[in-house]
Amino acid sequence: MEQSKIICGKTHAAAIRNAVKKRVCSGAAPHLAVVLVGENPASLVYIRNKQKACEEAGIHFSLHMLPETATQNEVLQTVDMLNADKNVHGILVQQPLPSQMDKHAVVSRIDPIKDVDCLHPQNLGLVAMGQSTVLPCTPSGIITLLKRENIEIAGKHAVIVGRSDIVGKPLALMLLNENATVTICHSKTQHLQEICRQADILVAAIGQPKFITADYVKCGAVVIDVGINRIDGKLYGDVDFENVIDKVSHITPVPGGVGPMTIAMLMENCVKAWELQNV
Figure 1: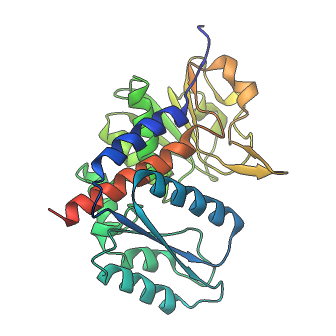
Figure 2: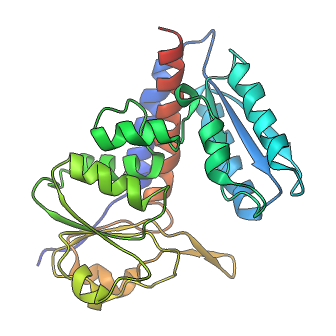
Figure 3: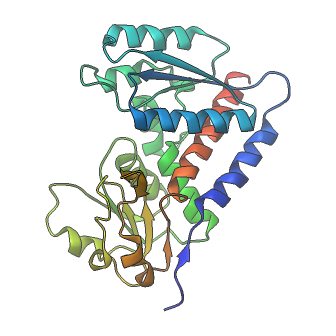
């Protein structure tokens, strides 16, 4: 087999962000508002990355912080305020929310046209129908990576390990829309290794470091690693990269693979939302 190709998400993300920057005019600009409840260290890192990307693209950024002890009603009031603000074009409620929150109620409160994470039930319904203008950031980043690398999706068997609302479920819908045959695996799946070995495209999104080893991968498969696991200050994916790399045709690294694409697609969604609100 030919040498495995490491897919550089940073390079593709930079090109997308440059294209986004060109769409933002010098006067009025998109405005992304992020709501953060509590001070989860990982969430703070993600938010700083989003703020930096916004600044580089010419997108206004504002952070609305509430304490860990905030009530759900206080969060909903913050979302209502941002919905009503015509100068705010995108709203993102940073996940995870504290345990006292009903995350579905919070996400459903966001005006669908300002839902740049594409988590509102209305927007996810449009994703299922293949009619959404704004797409979930990480799944969209994955599809975009595959297309930019000229990796065939139609007719291929895609196996997703993980069924989260943010990655697994919407990615399955989007891969179906691209005419892949899709299998979703999760914690209750039996014969997981056997199923994964059938995948032409294997997506790991379970939050368990180095879980996917060579025994889970067939020769020549494309492996997409969505995992971000921090251990002793170092990042690891859900795929045992060194163990798997000699067996695959393409693989995304961690860091530098899917992560940069997620933020690039968020920038894309902010500009799309802004354009839709200014038609």
